[in-house]
Amino acid sequence: MIMEQLITTLIMITVGAAIGGVTNSLAIKMLFRPYKAMYFLGKRVPFTPGLIPKRREELANQLGKMVVEHLLTAEGIKRKFLQAQFQDQMIAWGETQVRKVTGSQKTLEQLLASFDLDNPSKMVNDYLKRFLQGKYGEIVSGHKNKPLQEIIPKNMLDDVYVAIPKIGQFIIDKGIIYFESNEGKQKLGKMIEDFLATRGMLGNMIGMFLGNESLVDKVQPEVVKFLKNKETHHLITTLIGREWNQIQDMTLKDLDQKWGVIEKGSALLDIIVEKLNVEESLAKPISTYLKPNEEKMISVWLPKVVDISINFLISHLDGMLKQLKLEEVVREQVETFAVERLEDLILSISRSEFKMITYLGALLGGVIGGLQAIIVFFIQ
Image (cartoon, rainbow, N blue to C red; front, side, top):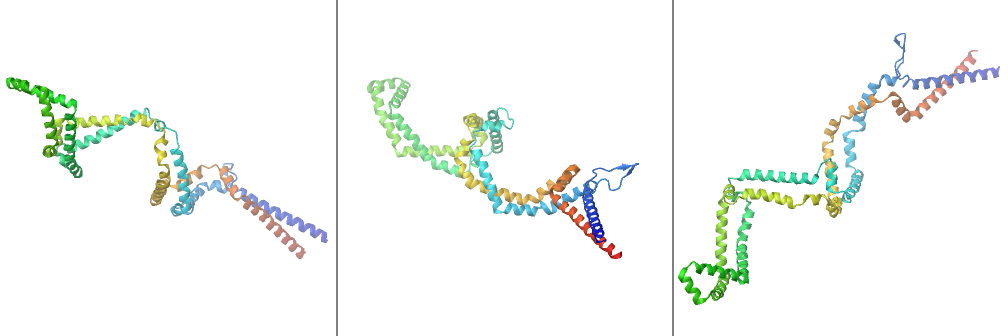
């Protein structure tokens, strides 16, 4: 009798555990299976498709809201940006990138060519000319009828006034050197000869009495003496200053009519661009230009760039996240997932928990079976 009761109890416990475990396992399977609705005689079979396939759209909406409201929040990202460890990591990453660039043997021409630009040298040359000529044209058209003194900054005008005595002295010094040289003496002799030739008989008489060579020897020291005289310096300085004052009062249009300065300035810009030798500059490796400043870029510029970038991101993060519309991105991604992939994703996270639920169902089923057996024995 006792043996029969024991066997009955074990059977009821086993059956209860099997029912509990299988029921929980089936319930878990029904979260995902079947993937699609099933029909019999034109009517949908109940509980098809599974819960998650049936509610996938709602699941996608809820996941999108959860990500935006609780996971990738602006406040959380800002806190991450402000962490000293994160900033140090950004600087370390930036240092690696800077050293790669500064040590690169790729030329500027190759770098530009990587952007599908044909003949970068000619392109840069043409761009520089267009840019400079455009700016030059704007300046000329805007100041054409203004006096020069209104165009040139006052400090530059003052610098010219300060330089006038030096210019005068420079001219005198060059004149003294020239007239003291053999070339200057010969030129002075030629000038005296031409002068006497225009004076007819009087010139011939002077030439006969003194001789051309003798006259040059007498005039040359006087010319040099005249140049060395302080009054000569004052005279030349005054003349230059007077001319400069007259030039300042002239408009750019007047200067162009008198000397063609506008066209000459335009031509000068083209010459400057040609002298820059863009082709040779672009043929040099990037490291030629960047390597000398590598340490300064890393120690001074990089931390500032990281700091400015982080502050910019923090101040604009709310707007950027709104523009990204992360909720829609997550929703659309989840909606495109195959149900099999959703099942694998959820099971990869909660497989052990689901197993525990199955085991717990079996345990509860076994306990209930055992209780039933005890109740049956007491009733009998």
